[in-house]
Image (spheres, rainbow, N blue to C red):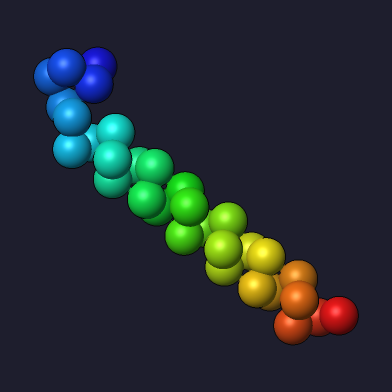
Length: 31
């Protein structure tokens, strides 16, 4: 998969990282 779509793997990883950061930020805002 990565051999055929190297940028796809990077994009998904970046989106997942941002999603985790946003989720952590929301939890901190509630606290």
